[in-house]
Image (tube, rainbow, N blue to C red; front, side, top):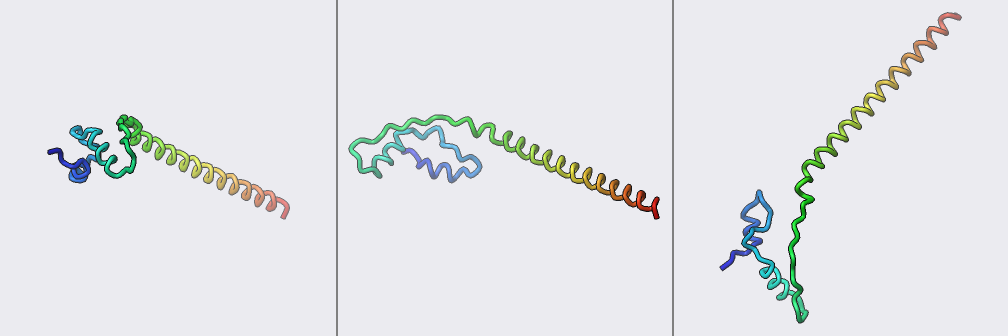
Length: 98
């Protein structure tokens, strides 16, 4: 007798993939019991490769965010330096006329 696939997934907490022993017929039977239709739709499983690259994409997004923050901080420092220089120049200019 085939073990319940949901139990198989729960028991293996590090890998939430459907075991290879699970066949679409299992889900069709479960679906058929819960539907009130005459025919049960045929199920086809398609592999989603989007998750294969999700870690890499997340790393790139985080790195981009760090780069943006570094650039923003540098611009703030540059702006403060310019303001300080302007204030110093104004003070010097005023001292010349006092």
